[in-house]
Image (cartoon, rainbow, N blue to C red; front, top):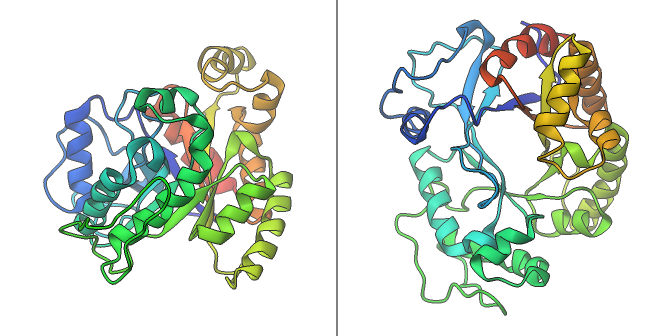
Length: 326
């Protein structure tokens, strides 16, 4: 197989039919139990591996899992002890830093220290309304929540006491597998303020596919590199990824238009021309060109997400797109 210039991760929300199947899949990822035969790994030669992510609290109902596509064949019968688990943008302000630290710390421990955490403020005001938090407080709360997560995970760290959150007197047992806790990436669309936050408090940057382009990502990364240097961090080793790269591969233009209008536009509140330019609904070669452009712009990982016919869409992606990405 041809190795892609970066890791390609495919969101597989709908590959698991229900919560029981999702739990079985997570058990397999964490190294115990066998999955129920209610979903398919697909062709082992395609090299699917599993990790999981989490969407907004109020906007999605299905269990959310992510499949990591790697170049080496994967034997479905062998343990998945080397799979990296990763969230997309978790919302510590909405969920609360203490329960989120407990949940993610447990996953890190069960997985043997294989979890990457990404957090952000979230863009849906109804998420904040659902838990009774003022949406205007989201930025200050996010900064404090990141400090609270680290204080809860790191046993030798002083408690965090801020305006909104305090970890004084709180001890998580058992803690994460790693003494320093999981790395915390910051989700940002690429604004100057957002990138300053990424550099200041983040261990990595998670960008959004439908809020950027290869050109915009490259410009944002150049700005982030400067901010990282100001923070005493090495830009050459600082990790990044682009999430929510929604796609649907088809040679049929009418089918592409239908998928865009019925699945994408009602979900993402962006102008149609913007989404058509930034998301990959259409011919496979256009997808390959876009991913190659992101690789040249400095993207290290891409989270892809089939928006319809999910299980079957992963096959043409592997056959026609991944091998062509250069």
